[in-house]
Length: 190
Image (tube, rainbow, N blue to C red; front, side):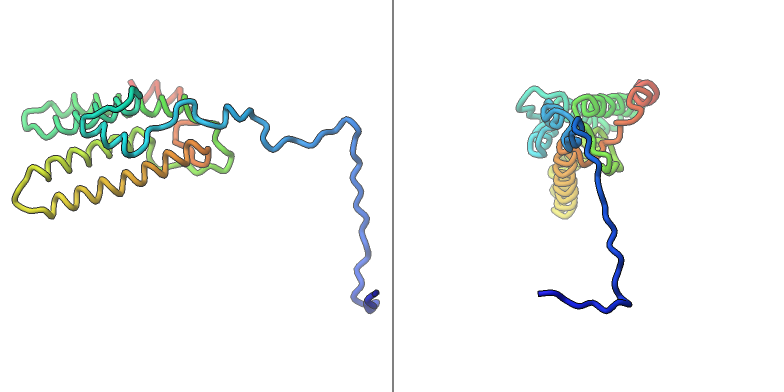
């Protein structure tokens, strides 16, 4: 069966030819070995992070140890006689240590990976802060509203951390230190 097309709407045919060299092989879409495409040591789960913030480090992991230490520092900040400057300096060092570990362990980032607004170390620091807030609110017996609010903030951030960890492990999220990480370590992380 043929279809008659009127002359005025016919489009001239264009012949497209590809010269293929005998030695030419098409590029492999997965050019890097699969071993490099995953994190050597994955980021801990949100549950392990929250356990570390509450004082229980389940497995030896640098991020869990930092979460535990950050939580301890946030609880120390609540003391009226605490040296806040020294505590914050120690917190900044721990945040940089986490970020350095993530930048060393992360898989190659895809070209179209989005940059996150906070580094993993910053998110862990906020999880530690919110965990200390929950502990403080739980000790206050006057009202349950501050405890519920603090618990809600902690839960929401823990879910966001879980999503961030998954995206970093899959290479679809840039954790923020991929470019210029040596400069960042020298200038920010003293």
